[in-house]
Image (cartoon, rainbow, N blue to C red; front, side, top):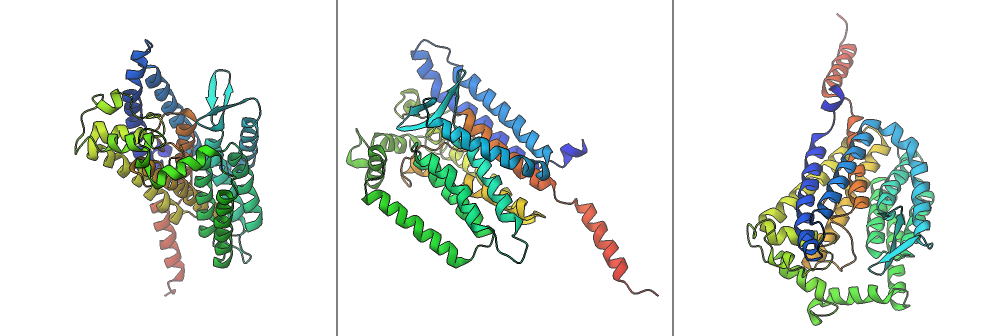
Length: 385
């Protein structure tokens, strides 16, 4: 019981609530399709429940393991993530929506880029944290190599959305690690130059170029290239303040939004739960992000600070891109909403990140221990009479 009391419920509660909401929204989106196909309408519901339960188990396991165990597991996890990303590019990989991002193994579809986010955060936290409290600065070059390896494999798929999230995550961790401003500006300039070169030299795939052009003017072709963006805006805005009611969405029931249970799950919340329900999801996500930043600030070690900050950057960037896709504020690059969208790889990886946050939080001394240490220090400093 003492261990359970030290778990951070300010992470557990919003993460669990988001998982439950995701189960309901996924069921609402997939039930009509399965009924029309004459299949079990609870197929996706059952799968998502399993995803959430497995994710919660992984979260608790990592939370109880502690930072020392996480550091010990980091290098093997990073190596396995690279192997998974490389395997995707072999005949074992499966292509979906223009990207060869999936592995089909024994009837299971796995997306290695999702757990690779966790491995990258932990590996960068180890590298950048080793010298963050010393006179020498953080090891920037090894950190860049560690980030470039999975990033290159992901761009080869190509998965622009995940690559964007990894760049933001690595950049945020470099800032937190105290890398010199001159180096950060140089890296930012190199990133902008690389993006410009990819555009003007025709290195992007045709579907990526089309998505970026559609983002600039989604209503130019609302029945063609801009269909997803147009339908997402219509759906998310049709629920009013409190929505049409769960399982009552006309757009959702009519299956007007493609990939609604994955990348566009936020549209279901907007239509069926209204502004209030969509805002609740954002508040819960903000609670997790705020807690991650608080844990980063309170951590006793550079590793803990960097790991928590990296998770905050990752989840924050992914949330912004996903919700931005729905609202027309970001191009459609195919990233799931953390803790909510359908998919075992995404759910388990996000909950693993939450477990890392709790593990870092548990490393803090208890308030009574801090008070006792302060009293002992004051007693030693008090002059003898």
